[in-house]
Length: 298
Picture (cartoon, rainbow, N blue to C red):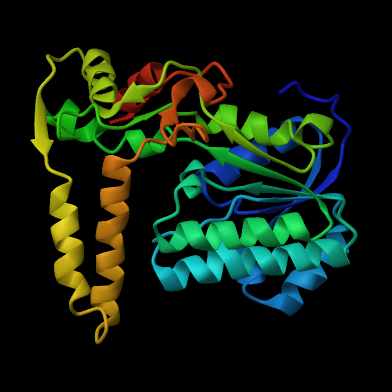
């Protein structure tokens, strides 16, 4: 996607306190836009949200909010209802474009938060407002949970042989630039845009090798079976009907199993398989460089 010339806009941004939302806020400011950031409290209060939207008079609304846990109640409240309230406020305030940060995993929806995201995507597409839905692959942050382990000399944990899943991770900065580049862009109008970072697609084992190389250590892996999450989900699911705690933990187990077994790449509609060559690439920041920076901060 080529970027349209930047025309300063009034922008209402939801989710600026999160990692990606903060990067988007910085990019919008650097591009000269006027940004009004919404708090989660405002999103939960329709009257306050409507008042803030009316005061900001946004031309563009960007949503980077997402449920923190992925549990059904949280997903319904944030991924669907909070976004829906934001959409209604945006339309009432006269916004011309709504840019949604979604996720590539909704292509194969098996989890509560994926269904909640898709339900809002459908509402957005049917609303009549100009829209762009951005579906990124893995974030650098999601592949950085083992930096401290490796620096401490511990093994890098993989599922099976570590090659079952692949992704094209994208940095916060590159994703923020891509989102900002959707503003007023005819190529992004009323489209769903999957996006990854610069290739090639990597497996979990590949990520581990990059991290060991950045740390100057010999690769040392420990394999974990993803089926442990299946059994955990089944056991916890037995109590889901009488215990909200069990139901929530069972969903966490299903989420863990999903990410251990499904690639974060575009699904080829012709074959039903994940396809690296169909997954668009954007940006220049690499996971290797990110690991070097993260290790320096530990």
